[in-house]
Image (cartoon, rainbow, N blue to C red):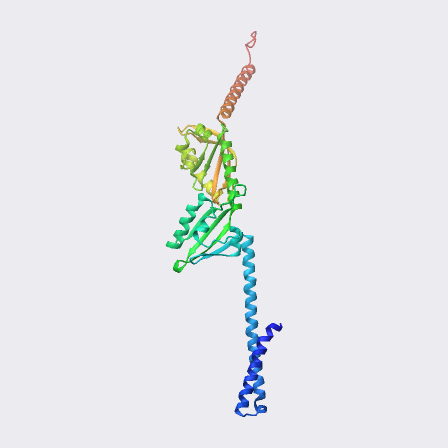
Length: 337
C-alpha cells in the first residue's frame, strides 16, 4: 500500500513546492491561493494514485492470465514458440524439449530423430520461405534406453519471415494408437487363422475393407475381388437388398442394431448359403464407423435339418397309411395283411 501511495504523494508535494516557489517569485500572497494549491495537489494525488492502481490491477491480471496459461500448457504438455531469424521458446516448450538453448534451425533439427529430420526440415523451410502452415509429428533424438517422445509441431507464418506456433508432447496418444494397431493386428490374425468363421469389414458406405480367407471360401470372392465393393452387391440376394441397406444406415445414425440371426445369403455363383450372422459396429482411429459381420456357415446344419424334416414327414406319412389300413374293415375269414 505504501509503495502505491509514495509516487502520487511525491508528485503532489513537488507540485506544491514548485507552485509555492513560483508564487513567491511573483510576489503573490500565499493566503489567497493556498486553498487552490491544496485542491490542485489533492487532485493530482488522487489522479496519479488511480492511474497507478489501475496499472497495478492490470499487471496483476496479466500475471494471473500468464500463470493460468502456463498451467494449462503444462497440463496439456504444450508449449509455444516464435521465430524472427532465431527461435524463442516459452517455458513450457523448453520443458518439453529438455531446457534447450538452441535458437537456430540447425540446432533445433539436431534435437530430433535422424529418421524424422528431413520431414521436419522440409516443413520448417516451407513455413519460413513459402508461408505454408507447419503440421509435423516427429520424435526427439533420445538414448535408446529412454522411452520414445513424440512431438506435434504446428506453426503459422507472419510477415517478414517471422512465424509462431506450438509444440505438444503427444507420446501418450502415439502409444495408444500403437496399442490399438497391435490389437487390430491380433484381431485380424485371429480371424485369418479361424477357418470356419467368415469375417467381413465394411466402411460407412458399406464398402469392403476387410475380407478374411473363410469369407473367400464361403462366398467365392477372393480378397482382390471383394475389396472396395459394397455389401449388397456381393452377398445379399436382390429381394433383401433395399431392406438391408436401410437397416444398416439406420443403425449407423443411432437406430436399432442388427440382431444376430440366421440368414440366407448368396455366393458369387448365385447359389444360396445359410449362415448365422452376427454384427458389430466399431469406430476406427479416425473416429469413423465400421461394420463387421461374423458369419458361420449353417449350410450343413440346414441340410441336416431339412433331411430330418423330410424323414419325419415320410415317417408320418407311413404312420398315416398304416393307420388308415388298420382302420378299414376286413373281409370275413381274412386276417389283416
